[in-house]
Structures are given as C-alpha cells and as structure tokens.
Length: 418
Image (spheres, one colour):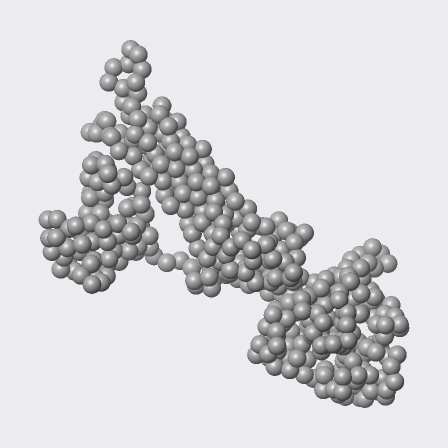
C-alpha cells in the first residue's frame, strides 16, 4: 500500500537519575559524597533511506519512544546513555512539527538525518553538589525528561520525469513499456491511485526515474478528487511529460485536456509551468488521432509535441532520447523547503490564575520541578532557592498570591506558605 502522509508521536528518552551515595571504604574515615550522574536519554532521529518508497509503516505504528539513560551508581560511576532510536523514511520526506507546522527537515538525500526529539540530560549525583560550605550533600537530581512531540510526515516523490495526464490517457501503459514497472492497467478511470516509479536505462548506462502521477481532473488544485494527494508528487520532478489522449477516446477535446492540465499545475504552484516539458500525443494507433494531432499542433505552436503509441511502441525511442536530453541539459531543482530555526527568548516562567489556582508554566521552571526530588528536604531547599533566584516568588506576590493558595507547576501542586 502506498502511503504518503503520516502523523506520529515521538518521545525521546528521559535522562537517568543521579544518585545519593557516600564513600564507605575501610580505613577511609568520613567518606565524602560519591553519587554518580545519570546517563543521557536517547535521541529520536529520522533518516532518509532510498530503499523505502512509502510511509506505510507509520500507519500501523504511530508511537515511538527512545531508551532512557541508566541511573548513576556509587563510587561516582555515571549511568550509561540510552540508545538512540533511528526511524527510516523514504527520500523526499518533509518533517513538520504537528503543532506549529514548522518544517524541521526536508530529507532529499539518502542517509540524510535530522534529530527530531532530543534525549534528556542525566541528573547530577550528590558528588556534583559538594562544596567547601556543603561537604556532604544528601540530594541528587532526577533525569531531565526527553523531548516529545507530534510530527507530520509528508512524502513528495523524487523523479527526473513526471507523467501528467487525465485518467485513461495511457500513462500507466507508457511507463510499463519503457521501464520494469508493472502498474495495474484497466479501462476505467482512476485505475492508478498511487504514484508508480519506473527506471529507464539509457544507452550509456544512465538511469532515468519516471514517476507515473495518478490522473488529474479539473479542480485538482482545489483538492477535487485526490488532487492535492496527486499534485504534491509533481513538485519535485525535473521534467514534466504531458500524456494526452489524442484519439479522444473518452470524448474530451485533446486541446482542452492540455489547457486544463496546465491550468491545474499553474494554480497549484505557478513555478511548475516553467519546468522543462514535452507533450506526448498518445494513442496514435487509433482512428482520428492523426486529425487531432494536427489540431493540437496548431493550437500549441510553442510546445514540443511528439506523437507516440504506448500500446504499439511507436515513437517511444525518440521520446526517451528527448527526455534524457532535457534531464541532462536543463535540470530544475525544486527549492528545498526551509528548515525553520526560530529563535525565541526563553521565558523562565509564565503565571496565569485559573479558578483560584496559580498555574506556572515555562520550559525552565517545569524542567526544574521535574528534576527535583520533592521527597528530599535538601532538594526542596535547593528548589526554593532556585525559584527565588529566578524571581518566581516575587512575581507570584505581584499577582496577589496569599498564604494557603495553590500553585501548580506541571503536574505538581504546592501550597503557598509565607
């Protein structure tokens, strides 16, 4: 099954917890703190793989989680980092953040990678908090939570030549004659519901990748039929080949067919009509085709029109020679979607009063809560010092907080005491 869109949830590994430990060795009096740090959580990476041609795997499994880091150990031993999780996607996959729709990456080359979720750093063990004034700290940090998000994956096929035409124009027959591709062919509309790729070998051994784009209909640029699903695959093709039913077997005028197809491409993305292109006047083996070919040439004097018959093979050699020439001499590179790196000054916190509860949010303060052992008195004292230094307590007082009010940070609720 061909799938070119998917929505998945990813969760990078949490960092391992730091631990509280002290040296306990014979002949070593008053052993100092020796708790090691936790290991970093595993990242989740997306990697382009030229051996894949569909996002089908992500239809059946939508949630992915990387390994968390190991906890620290005594004798200042650090925990091992969690293994990274690599998700392989087809070449041509665009990765977006589902919430913001920002482009995280456009994976257009085999092996290209993007870290889509970063693992949390390991918590520090108590040995890291020792100082000249606090020589035996009895607290440690928890591991930092790994990044999590929903992603939108969108596949736009990469090909040298894209076949564009109405249903039953003969695109599937053409690609089956010139390559090893074997698409399903039948005499009814929309036989092809997914793009097919075929590779044509030239006389010098070069390969030409041809994409059979499913048949378009009028209004496709507005999403009519499966318009948007089809048109996205035209965007990355270097040369466009219009395949027309010159015999007019479906009762449509061949000149109107070209104009409608060209108009749909222009309204979807105007730059598509500036791509190098050819017009294949197909079905020349059928009655009436010769007369319609002349009509087509008169109506489109600026287009290069090549008469062919995909069924008999007439004109295919000349067509392929022209396609090889166009691909070599006038390559058109589809502009890669920009990777968005928006700089935003990190707010330490935000305060909002909801139903009498002071809700505090912000990556920095939420991370502080998540990495604090709230059952440890020393850790709580350090947490209190950190939020005072951050300015949170003063800000809460400015918002009118009173003793006994509830403060919520993340999933944790605190009672405010003066």
